[in-house]
Length: 524
Image 1: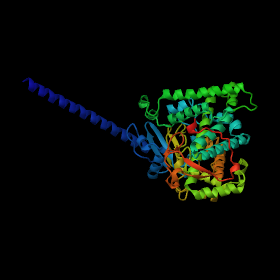
Image 2 (image 1 turned 60 degrees about the vertical axis):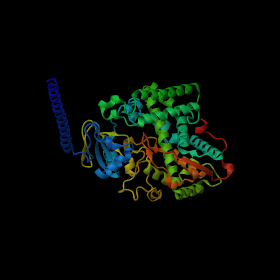
Image 3 (image 1 turned 90 degrees about the vertical axis):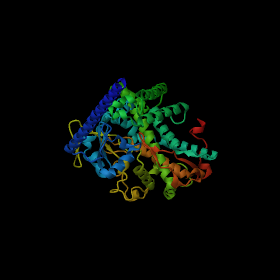
């Protein structure tokens, strides 16, 4: 009897569980169906651009992948050059062609020049949007920085510093040659750009002192933290998971960078330089009430990151393509020899204006390897929707231009995947002023990079000097065509495997400097 009752109870419990489960499943299916219908109807009413169907809650987050510029490029080939995605709770519209980029950055630039809320990570890294790139006061901050940092007068003023820094790089590579060691192009390029920017900002070479190495490690850690994907920025109720980065860790690494800034400002106050460094100019503006102390930190970090990270990575990509294409390297060396001469080591900035093929090589590098492949997002104004190419982009959307895809637009470029600098000899477009939206590594419109002239000048000088001074080969007889070209996405895109190359002097021995300016990885 007891057994029978127990069996009966089990049967009833089991039936109850099954019934409960069926109700839950039915409710879930119903909710998903309602969600799908509502989204379908809403999208139809809003005339959104086409795009892949997403999952409930997550949307298209799983479609983006670890290299979103490549994933979005592939999706655009299926859904079109203006594409809509749902990233968690956020609408995103992606422009992937010259036509679409022109609409976003030129036709509707006046409506789309503001920045959206980019999430917790960006708020922390920009001191709550107190910098040039993300801040609401970006007009004012650009004006404050223009004369001391971005003007033609500033570019000329710091010319000897740039030429001195590349001489140190050449000396360092020559020293490595004597030791029979390969040169790490990424490391040397980063030290080169960091020392230049460091002297402009702090009157200090940052790239070759032990204290500076710690600062560089802090910056690298910073880039790793903030270049990652933080799911809580797209699905708010999952922000507690800290997937993609802990806010505590972000604040801590930013505190270390702040301490470095304060120390450098204190050192400048103790020294009596004729010219004020940028951080002193900004501090004076803060004391006058034009900007805040937080603006000072935001601007300095902005310039350090933008001025070093993007330029150094462009140098590495350009050298990689030159080594993969020896016929391009040879033609470039012949041009430089014709301007500088084989009896002279130093490439002067005054030489660069006569190097047309050098500019073509750099434009082609920037077309295929833009350092920032996805532009920082633009925001639709809060007062309403924005019509683009016949589609409605609703308020609250993030609008992103896929620069990496634009450079591969087959309607603009013949053989778009081929590295061919000659195309820019026939079509010498000006990338520094966005005259042609087929190559927009510095952006376009009101938000175009204010430091583009300085960045391009550093890259020009570095590539001309490296190519003039040395012949380049890969260790262990590796075939240049087998070089790993895979990418790692972050705040900018770097090579997954850094370029390690052997340098052989191509000029007379007495021309090479014997004092070297950098420490090397195995000597730090």
